[in-house]
Length: 276
Image: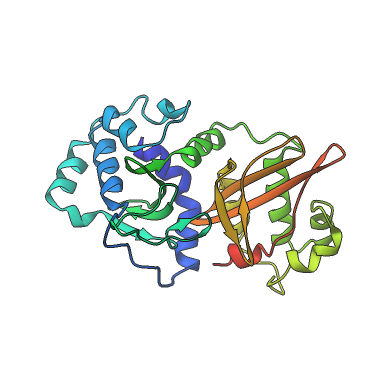
Protein backbone atom coordinates (compact mmCIF):
# COMPACT_ATOMS: atom_id res chain seq x y z
CA UNK A 1 0.00 0.00 0.00
CA UNK A 2 2.77 2.42 0.95
CA UNK A 3 4.73 1.54 -2.16
CA UNK A 4 1.80 2.14 -4.50
CA UNK A 5 1.12 5.59 -3.09
CA UNK A 6 4.78 6.58 -2.84
CA UNK A 7 5.61 5.49 -6.39
CA UNK A 8 2.80 7.59 -7.81
CA UNK A 9 4.20 10.65 -6.08
CA UNK A 10 7.92 10.01 -6.46
CA UNK A 11 8.64 11.91 -9.67
CA UNK A 12 6.63 15.02 -8.94
CA UNK A 13 7.48 15.30 -5.27
CA UNK A 14 11.21 14.84 -5.75
CA UNK A 15 11.17 17.55 -8.39
CA UNK A 16 9.16 19.95 -6.28
CA UNK A 17 11.35 19.41 -3.25
CA UNK A 18 14.37 20.39 -5.34
CA UNK A 19 12.68 23.42 -6.87
CA UNK A 20 10.92 24.65 -3.75
CA UNK A 21 13.56 24.47 -1.05
CA UNK A 22 12.23 27.12 1.28
CA UNK A 23 11.13 27.58 4.86
CA UNK A 24 7.79 26.10 5.86
CA UNK A 25 5.43 27.12 8.66
CA UNK A 26 6.15 25.22 11.89
CA UNK A 27 3.77 22.49 12.97
CA UNK A 28 1.22 23.60 15.57
CA UNK A 29 1.99 22.72 19.17
CA UNK A 30 -1.62 21.92 20.12
CA UNK A 31 -4.27 19.93 18.30
CA UNK A 32 -1.62 18.77 15.87
CA UNK A 33 -2.45 16.46 12.93
CA UNK A 34 0.89 14.71 13.41
CA UNK A 35 -0.38 12.06 15.83
CA UNK A 36 -2.91 10.99 13.19
CA UNK A 37 -0.20 10.84 10.52
CA UNK A 38 2.02 8.71 12.75
CA UNK A 39 -0.87 6.39 13.56
CA UNK A 40 -1.65 6.02 9.87
CA UNK A 41 1.94 5.14 8.95
CA UNK A 42 2.01 2.53 11.73
CA UNK A 43 -1.27 1.12 10.40
CA UNK A 44 0.19 0.92 6.89
CA UNK A 45 3.35 -0.86 8.06
CA UNK A 46 1.31 -3.18 10.28
CA UNK A 47 -1.35 -3.83 7.60
CA UNK A 48 -3.88 -2.81 10.25
CA UNK A 49 -6.90 -2.11 8.06
CA UNK A 50 -9.22 -1.35 10.97
CA UNK A 51 -6.92 1.40 12.29
CA UNK A 52 -6.32 2.66 8.76
CA UNK A 53 -10.05 3.02 8.18
CA UNK A 54 -10.54 4.72 11.55
CA UNK A 55 -7.85 7.34 10.79
CA UNK A 56 -9.06 8.14 7.27
CA UNK A 57 -12.18 9.82 5.94
CA UNK A 58 -14.87 7.66 4.33
CA UNK A 59 -14.62 7.02 0.60
CA UNK A 60 -16.47 4.40 -1.47
CA UNK A 61 -13.22 3.27 -3.12
CA UNK A 62 -10.99 3.36 -0.04
CA UNK A 63 -10.56 -0.41 0.08
CA UNK A 64 -8.43 -0.33 -3.07
CA UNK A 65 -5.70 1.34 -0.95
CA UNK A 66 -5.54 -1.57 1.49
CA UNK A 67 -6.37 -4.61 -0.63
CA UNK A 68 -3.41 -6.94 -0.90
CA UNK A 69 -1.38 -5.23 1.81
CA UNK A 70 1.17 -7.10 3.92
CA UNK A 71 2.92 -6.42 7.23
CA UNK A 72 6.29 -4.70 6.89
CA UNK A 73 7.76 -5.93 10.15
CA UNK A 74 11.13 -4.27 9.62
CA UNK A 75 9.65 -0.80 9.00
CA UNK A 76 7.16 -1.25 11.82
CA UNK A 77 9.86 -2.17 14.32
CA UNK A 78 12.14 0.62 13.08
CA UNK A 79 9.47 3.29 13.52
CA UNK A 80 8.47 1.99 16.93
CA UNK A 81 12.12 2.10 18.07
CA UNK A 82 12.91 5.42 16.40
CA UNK A 83 9.78 7.63 16.25
CA UNK A 84 11.90 10.55 15.05
CA UNK A 85 12.67 8.65 11.86
CA UNK A 86 9.28 9.70 10.49
CA UNK A 87 9.80 13.16 9.03
CA UNK A 88 6.72 15.39 8.78
CA UNK A 89 6.74 18.83 7.20
CA UNK A 90 3.77 21.16 7.13
CA UNK A 91 3.53 22.49 3.56
CA UNK A 92 1.26 25.46 4.20
CA UNK A 93 -0.60 26.97 7.16
CA UNK A 94 -3.63 25.13 8.50
CA UNK A 95 -6.66 26.60 6.73
CA UNK A 96 -10.26 27.13 7.76
CA UNK A 97 -12.57 28.33 5.00
CA UNK A 98 -9.51 29.21 2.95
CA UNK A 99 -7.89 31.41 5.62
CA UNK A 100 -5.26 30.61 8.22
CA UNK A 101 -6.94 28.74 11.07
CA UNK A 102 -6.66 29.79 14.71
CA UNK A 103 -7.02 27.76 17.89
CA UNK A 104 -10.11 28.27 20.00
CA UNK A 105 -10.17 28.76 23.76
CA UNK A 106 -9.88 24.99 24.24
CA UNK A 107 -6.76 24.77 22.10
CA UNK A 108 -8.52 23.12 19.15
CA UNK A 109 -8.96 24.03 15.51
CA UNK A 110 -12.46 24.44 14.03
CA UNK A 111 -14.11 21.42 12.43
CA UNK A 112 -13.39 21.72 8.72
CA UNK A 113 -9.80 22.95 9.13
CA UNK A 114 -7.46 21.37 6.58
CA UNK A 115 -3.77 20.51 6.66
CA UNK A 116 -1.23 19.47 4.04
CA UNK A 117 1.96 17.61 4.97
CA UNK A 118 4.92 16.07 3.22
CA UNK A 119 6.14 12.98 5.04
CA UNK A 120 9.01 10.53 4.59
CA UNK A 121 10.40 7.61 6.54
CA UNK A 122 13.65 6.59 4.92
CA UNK A 123 12.15 6.39 1.43
CA UNK A 124 10.28 8.40 -1.16
CA UNK A 125 8.20 11.27 0.26
CA UNK A 126 4.43 11.36 0.05
CA UNK A 127 1.82 14.08 0.45
CA UNK A 128 -0.83 13.72 3.14
CA UNK A 129 -3.98 15.86 3.28
CA UNK A 130 -6.06 15.99 6.45
CA UNK A 131 -9.31 17.45 7.73
CA UNK A 132 -10.26 18.33 11.30
CA UNK A 133 -13.44 16.48 12.26
CA UNK A 134 -15.32 16.53 15.56
CA UNK A 135 -13.62 13.26 16.51
CA UNK A 136 -10.16 14.58 15.63
CA UNK A 137 -7.86 14.83 12.61
CA UNK A 138 -8.54 12.40 9.78
CA UNK A 139 -6.55 11.74 6.59
CA UNK A 140 -8.32 12.67 3.35
CA UNK A 141 -7.69 9.85 0.85
CA UNK A 142 -9.43 11.40 -2.16
CA UNK A 143 -6.21 12.39 -3.91
CA UNK A 144 -4.68 8.97 -3.25
CA UNK A 145 -7.73 7.39 -4.86
CA UNK A 146 -7.29 9.74 -7.83
CA UNK A 147 -3.67 8.56 -8.09
CA UNK A 148 -4.81 4.97 -8.41
CA UNK A 149 -6.96 6.05 -11.36
CA UNK A 150 -3.92 7.65 -13.02
CA UNK A 151 -1.83 4.54 -12.37
CA UNK A 152 -4.50 2.31 -13.92
CA UNK A 153 -3.61 3.65 -17.36
CA UNK A 154 -7.09 5.04 -17.99
CA UNK A 155 -6.44 8.61 -18.96
CA UNK A 156 -9.01 11.40 -18.59
CA UNK A 157 -11.64 11.56 -21.30
CA UNK A 158 -11.10 14.11 -24.10
CA UNK A 159 -12.89 17.34 -23.28
CA UNK A 160 -13.41 16.40 -19.63
CA UNK A 161 -12.63 19.00 -16.94
CA UNK A 162 -9.61 16.89 -15.93
CA UNK A 163 -8.21 16.89 -19.47
CA UNK A 164 -8.93 20.59 -20.03
CA UNK A 165 -6.98 21.50 -16.87
CA UNK A 166 -3.99 19.40 -17.90
CA UNK A 167 -4.08 20.78 -21.43
CA UNK A 168 -4.18 24.34 -20.11
CA UNK A 169 -1.21 23.89 -17.77
CA UNK A 170 0.78 22.16 -20.50
CA UNK A 171 0.06 25.01 -22.92
CA UNK A 172 1.19 27.48 -20.26
CA UNK A 173 4.43 25.61 -19.66
CA UNK A 174 5.03 25.60 -23.42
CA UNK A 175 4.33 29.37 -23.39
CA UNK A 176 1.64 28.73 -26.01
CA UNK A 177 -0.69 31.66 -25.45
CA UNK A 178 -2.86 30.80 -28.45
CA UNK A 179 -3.73 27.31 -27.24
CA UNK A 180 -4.09 28.47 -23.64
CA UNK A 181 -6.45 31.23 -24.74
CA UNK A 182 -8.84 28.70 -26.24
CA UNK A 183 -9.07 26.86 -22.91
CA UNK A 184 -10.05 29.78 -20.64
CA UNK A 185 -13.43 31.42 -20.18
CA UNK A 186 -12.25 34.91 -21.13
CA UNK A 187 -9.43 35.41 -23.63
CA UNK A 188 -8.97 38.93 -22.25
CA UNK A 189 -7.55 37.30 -19.10
CA UNK A 190 -4.47 35.89 -20.89
CA UNK A 191 -2.15 38.40 -19.23
CA UNK A 192 -3.43 37.30 -15.82
CA UNK A 193 -2.98 33.64 -16.79
CA UNK A 194 0.62 34.26 -17.88
CA UNK A 195 1.51 36.58 -15.03
CA UNK A 196 4.92 35.50 -13.75
CA UNK A 197 5.66 33.27 -16.74
CA UNK A 198 9.34 32.71 -17.54
CA UNK A 199 10.80 34.17 -20.71
CA UNK A 200 11.82 30.75 -21.95
CA UNK A 201 10.29 27.32 -21.57
CA UNK A 202 11.84 25.18 -18.84
CA UNK A 203 13.62 22.55 -20.97
CA UNK A 204 13.77 19.49 -18.71
CA UNK A 205 10.15 18.40 -19.11
CA UNK A 206 9.87 17.79 -15.37
CA UNK A 207 7.05 20.30 -14.91
CA UNK A 208 5.08 18.76 -17.77
CA UNK A 209 5.51 15.35 -16.12
CA UNK A 210 4.19 16.81 -12.88
CA UNK A 211 1.08 18.02 -14.72
CA UNK A 212 0.52 14.49 -16.04
CA UNK A 213 0.95 12.98 -12.55
CA UNK A 214 -1.19 15.58 -10.75
CA UNK A 215 -4.21 14.00 -9.01
CA UNK A 216 -7.36 16.08 -9.43
CA UNK A 217 -10.42 15.86 -7.18
CA UNK A 218 -13.74 17.63 -7.51
CA UNK A 219 -14.30 19.53 -4.26
CA UNK A 220 -17.62 20.13 -2.62
CA UNK A 221 -19.59 23.17 -1.51
CA UNK A 222 -18.28 24.29 1.86
CA UNK A 223 -14.67 23.48 0.93
CA UNK A 224 -12.47 26.53 0.42
CA UNK A 225 -8.97 26.91 -1.06
CA UNK A 226 -7.00 30.07 -1.84
CA UNK A 227 -5.53 31.17 -5.13
CA UNK A 228 -3.50 34.39 -5.37
CA UNK A 229 -5.87 37.24 -4.57
CA UNK A 230 -9.02 35.40 -3.49
CA UNK A 231 -10.58 32.19 -2.17
CA UNK A 232 -12.36 29.55 -4.24
CA UNK A 233 -15.33 27.59 -2.85
CA UNK A 234 -16.16 24.16 -4.19
CA UNK A 235 -19.53 22.94 -5.39
CA UNK A 236 -20.76 21.79 -8.78
CA UNK A 237 -23.71 22.61 -10.99
CA UNK A 238 -24.51 21.57 -14.53
CA UNK A 239 -22.27 24.33 -15.90
CA UNK A 240 -19.70 24.82 -13.11
CA UNK A 241 -17.13 22.53 -11.53
CA UNK A 242 -14.34 23.13 -9.03
CA UNK A 243 -11.37 20.77 -8.92
CA UNK A 244 -8.32 20.78 -6.69
CA UNK A 245 -5.03 19.36 -7.93
CA UNK A 246 -1.89 18.42 -6.04
CA UNK A 247 0.94 19.83 -8.14
CA UNK A 248 3.50 17.97 -6.07
CA UNK A 249 2.82 19.37 -2.59
CA UNK A 250 1.15 22.55 -3.92
CA UNK A 251 -2.65 22.79 -3.99
CA UNK A 252 -4.09 24.29 -7.18
CA UNK A 253 -7.84 25.06 -7.34
CA UNK A 254 -9.51 25.28 -10.77
CA UNK A 255 -12.96 26.71 -11.51
CA UNK A 256 -14.41 25.52 -14.81
CA UNK A 257 -17.45 26.84 -16.67
CA UNK A 258 -19.29 25.16 -19.50
CA UNK A 259 -19.41 27.23 -22.67
CA UNK A 260 -21.69 25.52 -25.14
CA UNK A 261 -20.50 21.92 -25.02
CA UNK A 262 -16.95 22.79 -23.89
CA UNK A 263 -15.45 23.10 -20.42
CA UNK A 264 -13.16 26.09 -19.94
CA UNK A 265 -11.07 27.26 -16.99
CA UNK A 266 -11.36 30.61 -15.26
CA UNK A 267 -7.96 32.28 -15.56
CA UNK A 268 -5.79 32.57 -12.46
CA UNK A 269 -2.08 33.39 -12.07
CA UNK A 270 -1.17 29.70 -11.94
CA UNK A 271 2.53 30.30 -12.55
CA UNK A 272 2.69 31.71 -9.01
CA UNK A 273 1.67 28.25 -7.79
CA UNK A 274 3.57 26.09 -10.27
CA UNK A 275 6.85 27.85 -9.51
CA UNK A 276 6.68 27.59 -5.73
